[in-house]
Image 1 (cartoon, rainbow over the protein chains, first blue to last red):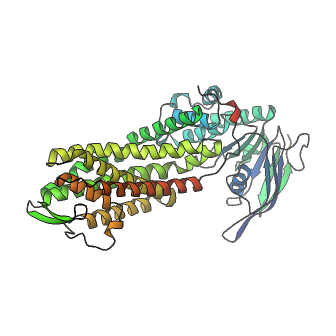
Image 2 (cartoon, rainbow over the protein chains, first blue to last red):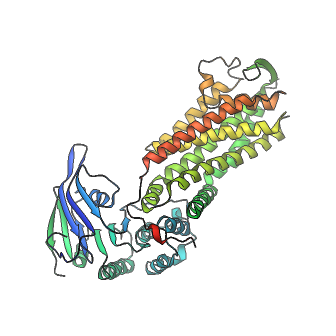
Image 3 (cartoon, helix red, strand yellow):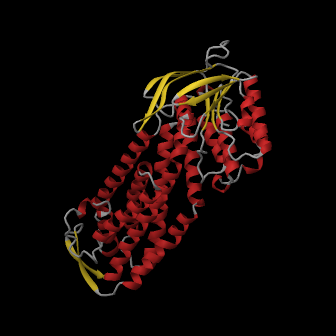
Length: 211
Length: 263
């Protein structure tokens, strides 16, 4: 991250990224480096372009200008749960196991326990509550133990215990050397971050934290 | 190779099980088809009508209710196949994109979608043929079943195409229902006895309609018209695959290709 630690080569490097939607310039030359072992928060008002920035970061969306460089596997948790309502939780895990080429679902099983999802394997996703769908949405982003995690408000609808467990998990992953970006709106979450990048008028403004 | 096969079978299995969990689709398939055939049987007169069939190049005499039942069966199967395929494609497109970005093999995914359409159309055709066989004195059951399967395939392909293209669910349903109504309305010899509306031969159901009516009501089996319907099915399926291919990401930015061993 710019202005933060530079001990490792960044896992994600965004340079001079611009994006325009319908004549409105959403991103105006955004720069962001996220090194290994860093937990970065991206904050900003509604419609500031946080989700657009994250979608560009993971390759879902092409920037109008600028470059994005990623190294290693990426786990992306979109803001709105992207799941198939007709499939069960177990079917989702099996399909993403093939997509990620995972030998086993051991890690997914651990995460299911951590997120209190174990009893849902046979349930159809369309029958799950909003919070439980979001847990599965997050689990899919984490189940292949990626080096870079890009999480867009991943805890929407979580109960307080799961919310706390999410932050413990994020801190553990950061300590294991993973690079994590989280979009957050919640003031009481800001102390979890190593650095905070505020998106204002299409540009990122960095703030150091007390961590 | 093993991964491709597993990816194909797993997605096909999930898609077919998803169809079985779609209660509205099940009710439509089980109840709408027989009800629509029964409506044609009860509400159309038993008067013998002479209808022109291009497939046998001659007028054919048959009871209006019998002609109506075959036409209704075709209409019902197109709507049900189109609805099931459109719903599945529309609801799964975001997730399919996520799977592809995560590294899911593209070709097995596309083939699984086509195979699901083909199996659904075949099953619907089998069921509808039994219903017509009970209700009518069908002359050639096999070709009639093939014609019905062709109708299901053509509208299944249209469902795939619209499911990938339209923005709203309602737009897709409306387009499928309107296309099916126009198509079956113009092909129905009770309404259009001379089949002389310009361009009727270009509609998706022209070939299967000729094959179905000839197989059910005459001693002739015009296979060439069956092939015409296969051309329609192949074209819509190819277009749908092209759209599915171009609308979904081309490569995975975060796959871990070396670590997979199927469990």
